[in-house]
Length: 249
Length: 266
Image 1 (cartoon, rainbow over the protein chains, first blue to last red):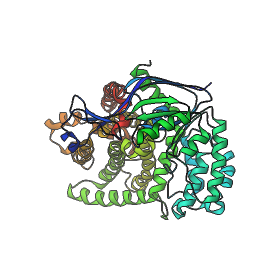
Image 2 (cartoon, one colour; image 1 turned 60 degrees about the horizontal axis):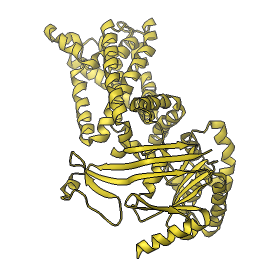
Image 3 (cartoon, rainbow over the protein chains, first blue to last red; image 1 turned 30 degrees about the horizontal axis):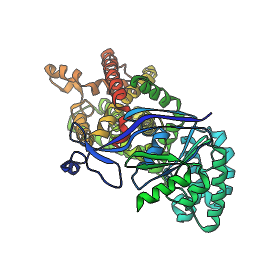
Image 4 (tube, each protein chain N blue to C red; image 1 turned 45 degrees about the horizontal axis):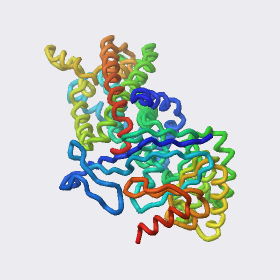
């Protein structure tokens, strides 16, 4: 059973930028973004996540709601294991499939086919397994002969189709999504929507960061409201969205 | 809660276990550099050949050396130096260059150091053929013999040395961006103070102790000697192994202390 447990987790980024040190105040609060402070060596610290404790269970489809810089992406990267907490502890049971930035890792000089191999290898799939998936990916992306062409010859839409098809060819256990919708033309969008729905159905836990209310309402059964890196509220989607919009006014 | 050391060791172990990924990355690095060129990675070989063949003649004459002795010596030295120097300079950017990938997928961090090493070892394998014509032409002094069997051992030691110090350099350079520049200028100086272009015999006797203090002299020997038909001195192995032991202790401490912070530096 997939399960995620966070126990008073904080994530702090040091910012090593010479001019950033001129910040006079020890703590500056902004309405967007994490809190800025200084560490013992006068480095600016961004407190991206502040003392988060929660449990995420099998079957949870969680929407992350909040301003830009509220800590949504940091939260996803924390679950993905990319960031480790500076304080507190985190325990993730289950294989994590991050879909954070679709275009990332697509190498323009390589062909579509080569990019599929690269991505598959990086996700830890054996060669035979990748080869199995290739047909499915090519078929879904509708790139046909273009799959043998370098990605730099693709149009923006084709590139998104390739990236989306590669990213969604997985069988996820814990699925992390960071605003990946809006791919390609209308026809592909519909197809992508169906694909995403089936992907979400397969996953035992989904965490979805989005600003699109209708998608959140459609896909999620729970929501977390983040502000300045702090967990403001967790609960049913409708209630949290309402709270979030009240906060915005 | 796992200790920092356990996590660091797990990263080292996973780094090796995921060899398929860094094999692919290293291969891809070379491929990417020479995409659409006819000779491909053999451009490396060609430019190395031109450098060594012209330098050998010029410096052989300048230093009044017997070309029979000097050509193989220089070729072996340049090939080995090319490997060591590029491993060190590339390590400086190991994490910085991998930043975008590190921000997307969680993979063991040591994997990016292996990638640098393998990439440069592959380049070395392309380059090494440059020495064959030299050994065919200038065979009075140096020749291919059973000593070549010591070559894999030398390369293995350089790999281990390069991995340990590469990891240290990569960590420091990720945190302090000036160090990368310092490393790159230092490496130029080291080239001149190490017996690569010149022979240790040309140095007055009482400076020879200084020579042994230069770890790069030992490292170079481990590969240059077997390539040109000689046995590396025992002290070259001793110094290298001592440096590996010291380096690995420091690297393990450094890596376990700062491993989880690296991602925030890039």
